[in-house]
Image (cartoon, rainbow, N blue to C red; front, side, top):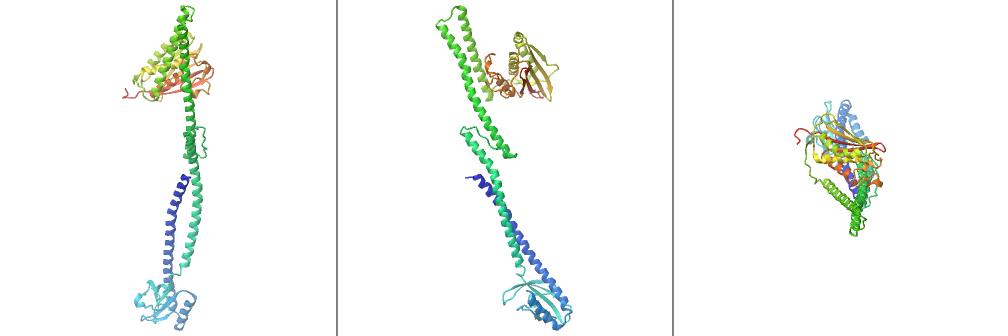
Length: 455
């Protein structure tokens, strides 16, 4: 059952009726009151006209005038002499001027006792010595027909408006509820593990934005699931490989399958190296896990970034020389301090420099610093192999390697850049990467300068 559709449609219809019904009632009342006021004014005006006419009409013609009004109109007339007695009338019975105070300019209501017809009357003084006043009676229902016509017109208009509102409500409710239903269907599919969902984005409003977000969520969840599967696969592979080396060479040592002492020592060295690799992998995994769970302690202090880059450069100088690489540092000028953990900040630079040196042969590595908009920006560039454009968005993910064929050639665990990104963000910084295949890679680090009061 489409509950959203009915709830939304019902709400719109109720709101419409809340507006339409009182409005129709008010309009009917306004027109009814207008008719009554108009009838009073019209009766008073006729009384005034007949008073003027009677002032110049001869006595024999008065009766004819009254009879003519009775025949030609629904109105009645009563003529009173100067003494207050009725001289002529056109069918009104039981009307006593003294009782109803039909004085000049006054109006009122009178019900004929014979036929119970209700009248609205108005009196006007006649400028004649023999006649006192003329009173005109208008049936109170004289304007009812026009009022009924107006009510019918309003009713038809209301029905038409109601049908239009129903059509609008149906279309609007469907337009609003259909995307929500599609998102509900997609959410249910995602809950069942089916992440190959696509919610149509039909509009550019909030519903369209929500549909787009649902699609992005599905893609991110799918990528997360794939990455998680790849992560477990990579961890298993990374641990299984050194374990197989350790087990194999331990068996060789146990069975004395070596030719001489030199080969035995070589087996021992391999076992030691692979055990060290496993230990480093487990250590990196543990640190990365703590960073992502925000349980990673940092010893934050005011740090001069130039001093950190010097220490990191000194560590890599010997390795760079072995690969005929030169490291150039351009950190001229005095940079303000930043709030960071000195040891972890050095770990960031060491890791990035290690990668730059490892993937560069007979080239150059640069470290350039500058101050921009309250941020210290440090670029670490190399002239190495570069990274393919399709790999750039994923290089900070765990175990992601741009070139699988040489994944172990450089002795890393595949977690270095993931750790670098986490450490950078934990120290209020950001990191970006740009690369051109065959020309080199540039990592850009930005850290906000320390403000007064930071410690």
